[in-house]
Amino acid sequence: MKSASLPSLRVEPALRKAAEQVLREGESLSAFMESSLRLSIEQRCSQNEFISRGLASRDRARVTGKYEDARSVIDELSQMLAEEKQKRS
Image (cartoon, rainbow, N blue to C red; front, top):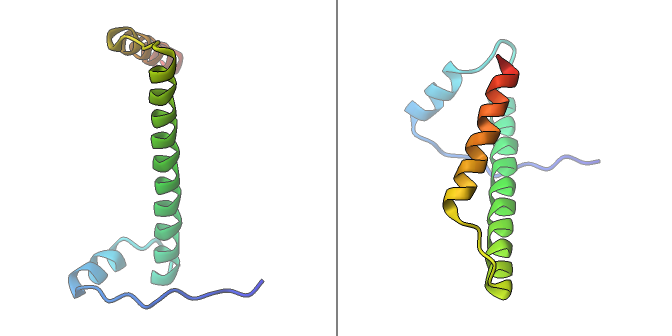
């Protein structure tokens, strides 16, 4: 597979310096930028999926008229969190 290049990126010198200061041993600035781009893409995809699920849930609730009480959802999430904390300790 052929590789493709991205447009060059103009940044303020302070941003470049900050990026260079966090490079790991043997890591190039290009590798850091590629890694950062991959992570940002992954985060955006996750956000988009989360929003899509939320909107679908809203639409189902509107159609069915069945809504979950916020207090019960918070209680359930709190219980799940407590169980996970107990497993880890």
